[in-house]
Image 1 (cartoon, protein in one colour):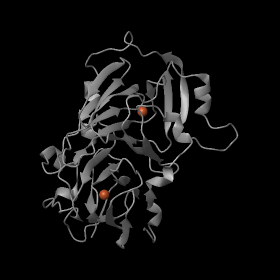
Image 2 (tube, helix red, strand yellow; image 1 turned 45 degrees about the vertical axis):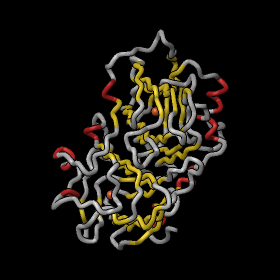
Image 3 (cartoon, rainbow, N blue to C red; image 1 turned 90 degrees about the horizontal axis):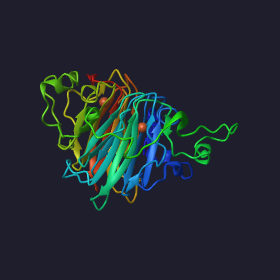
Image 4 (cartoon, rainbow, N blue to C red; image 1 turned 120 degrees about the vertical axis):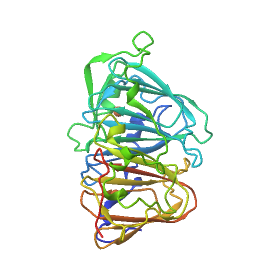
Length: 352
Ligand SMILES: [Fe+2]
Ligand SMILES: [Fe+2]
């Protein structure tokens, strides 16, 4: 249980549970359960909103509503839940990209990159082959979730339902607007070319095979040798702005199954970044999104104030605030770790 000066930076995923509101996006292909945290309401104003959820259903995620755009870029990340097979998604996804309405399909863990204003979706789950489904997270670079829906299949009633009651003072979890000119998706309007291929990239584990191009992305983290500890998973993938069509984010994703220290040294192991960072510790049990199945300790601040994480939690590390080391104390069930850093490079400076 987090206590102390930095307790407010620990955000249990459960804080974003939205029983009624979540129904807006409740369609067969969409999440069985998810949590969506944003900078405005949950993340200390960070220019970020992100989701985490479990998926087993087939079909369109938002029927009739797409394509859509945002005023900020986002990454849409599809991952599997088998800690021993990071290359296995367990699903086949169809994704529509760009003004060309170009149809793509993939069945490996992948990131879809949508720059600001770029048309994307429908997202359609064509097949789910893993008996426990798969996971998906959004990394969106805006504190206030905002979407413009351009599909021609949205009813007036649906539009009304997606807006908060006028005068109610309630902030919508998603600010929705609707295009004047609507787009119809059908076999006659979509295309099957390769103009937008570069907006979908496979996730390939690269934690233990840093290239020279990767090394310069980390700043001091690789000076004098970067020494992973026993708690670090080899299945993790780190993608930088250079891998994500130049957008200002870098993220690391992996399923961790071993206890121990994550990174060895230098010194006492605390570091800072020039950009805000959010660390998500998520469970991998689709039957209980609020179960972590591990106990992890992380130090915050120059005082090394120690915090314990034992439920799915996002940790906000504002720019310049020292944090780390991280130690996984024990693991009852492999857990997911997602690092979201709001710069193209993961510039890191050790402070003690
Ligand atoms: Fe989107
Ligand atoms: Fe960090």
